[in-house]
Structures are given as C-alpha cells and as structure tokens.
Image (cartoon, rainbow, N blue to C red; front, side):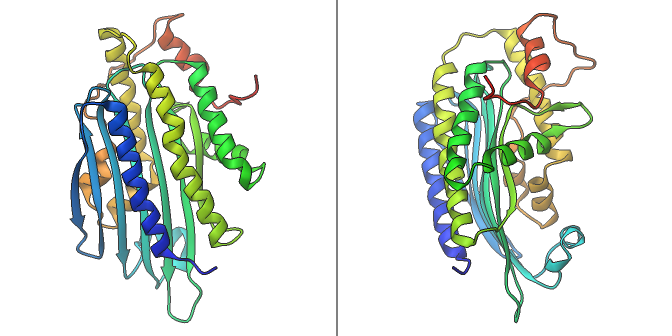
Length: 303
C-alpha cells in the first residue's frame, strides 16, 4: 500500500478531538480554547490549550500539518537522502501539567513524515510515543502505565515493547543531570518496516492508547491532599522538563528550525516553574525515593 498522507491527517485530527474531550471530562471544570493558524511556508494547524482547570493547570494538545519545498540543513546533514525533496510533516503532540503534585505530568506525540521527489520513491516514516513524569513515586501507577504500553505493542510483535521502552529511557535522559526525565514509556522513530499499513496501524494504537493509559492514574490521584512542600517540589522538578525540551528534544528543535509556530512549539513549557541551587532531597523522604528508585531505567514489570 502506497503512503496515504490524507488518511493519516484524518486520523490525527480526530485523535486531537478525542483526547481533548477526554481531558475536559477528567478536569470537569475548564475547556480547551482553540487557536487555528497558517504557516507562511506551507501548512498550518490547530493549537488547543486548557488552563487553570480543577485538575490540569495547563494542558496543550496540538495538531500540525506543515509542508515545505526543502528540508533544513540540520536535517539533511543527518539524512542526506532528503536533500532536494519537498516534505510534509504532520502530528499530534501534547503535554499535560496537572495542578496536584501527586498527578504526574505526561507527554505524548504521534507523527508522520514524507519527503517526495519527482521520479523517485517517497521517503517516509512514522514516529511517536508517550512517557510519564511523576513528581511523587507510586509504583502501582508506573507498573500499570508500562503494562498498558506492553499490551498496546504485543499485537505487533514481542520485541516492540522492550525495544521502544529502552529507546524511551535512552531518549528522555538528561546527561547533565545523570537522570531520566521520568519513568518512561514508549518512543519510536523512523518506523517504516513492514509497509505503510502496518506502521500506520501501530501509530494509531499508540496514539489512541495514550489516554486510556493516563486517565486511570489521573482519576486515582487528582483528589489527593497536598501542601506547600509538595507544590514547591513539583515546581522544582518541572525545571527538568524545561531543560530537556530546550536542549535535547528533536521535535522542538525541528519545529523551530523549520519556521514553525513558536507559541505552539513552546506550549509544552510548564506555566510555573522554579530552579533551586544545589537542591538535595531530605533523606528517607518521598522526594528522595523518587531520585533513588524511580529516575533510573529499569524493568518495571519484572516483579
């Protein structure tokens, strides 16, 4: 089956609708505001942001579909076969920053890229995944999250979950902190083996499966009582999100380098954040447990 970018676009736009509806129901108070935009170089998108909700301090769910006549030099340096080709890139990307520190932040993204050149076969691939960034450690939540990820992958092969779980651990790692951003999930990129239809099916499974994995965790933790200590720690740990997104994240860099809409690209930034020089968690505290036992790659389903 030849790559069908229109079918992918239809799915992604509906996925954005479905996720926004589910998040509004979980929040029970605030609604998403949509900002449609056009890109001068080609394409556009729909940015949707929910702010100051009862559960979510900020949630952004973006759909984008951008086109261009040529790839940026930074991309062709790594993928020389893309030189001289026009491109089309589309995806849904979201970041959710809850108000309650006991509810984890999360990120998800599914995307499709295709580059065309007259007289040559198109170059295409899918990418995406989802990951969880808790501020307080609940092993039950992490195990459930990874079990769900494994079950999404199983119809596509027994090697998918361990491969993409490890890729997620490796990708969302902050070398300058020597720690993972959170507890991982799935991350895949450059997926085109097995044909377009199979790869598209997998991307749909991951995209649709995100909210069914995240919602139960939100429901379980959203009414937990917390105080100033927990809130201050949450704001401090949000700083890791900023550091990763601005220094390492390929999607952020690609969007900025291709003239993407800055407001939409940077909607992943938390609304409030703090840094503290030389922070050390109190020994034997919940905060110390997060550092000592959770911010390290491991097999969450081993026991």
